[in-house]
Length: 43
Image (cartoon, rainbow, N blue to C red; front, side, top):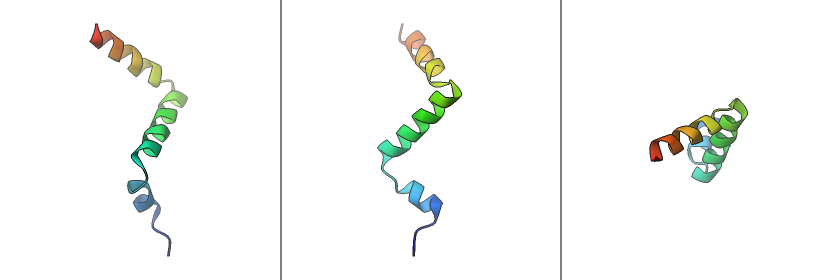
């Protein structure tokens, strides 16, 4: 019996989740904003 989708997501490799989140942010145009913020804070 396959695991429920939520369980599958919770046990997915962290790298995959990070990739999904990163692509999600890129698609919404937020990744560049975050990068800009991080650079501003670093200076």
